[in-house]
Amino acid sequence: MSLALFLIWVCVISCVVSSILNQPFDRKQRVFWVTVVILFPVLGVLAYLPFAFRKENLPVIFLRHRKHGRKGKPQPLDAE
View 1 (cartoon, rainbow, N blue to C red):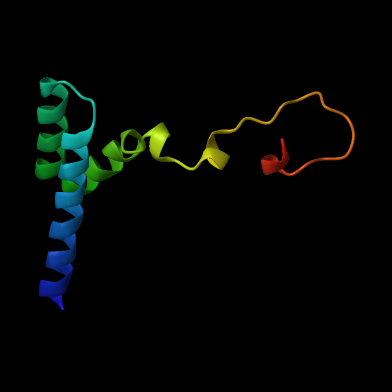
View 2: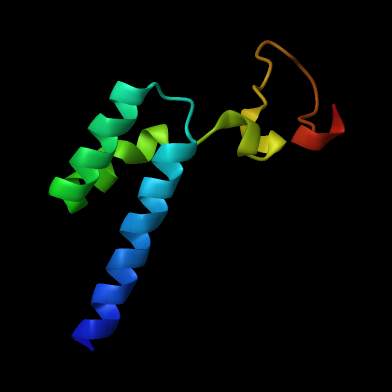
């Protein structure tokens, strides 16, 4: 059981490190984030989480802003 949990944790850390290396960070930022994630795994992963999302990879529905001030019947987001 503990070996399985350890392997899952290693996979999570390796995915986070892989994500850091694919971000458009400069060398100092990459070294900083990889060091934080390796030395403080739980805090490092939680601290890096907001930076892990790229806007171009998110579905379009999450990126649309609702226009305020419209009157009338509400329309679905994809019917613009």
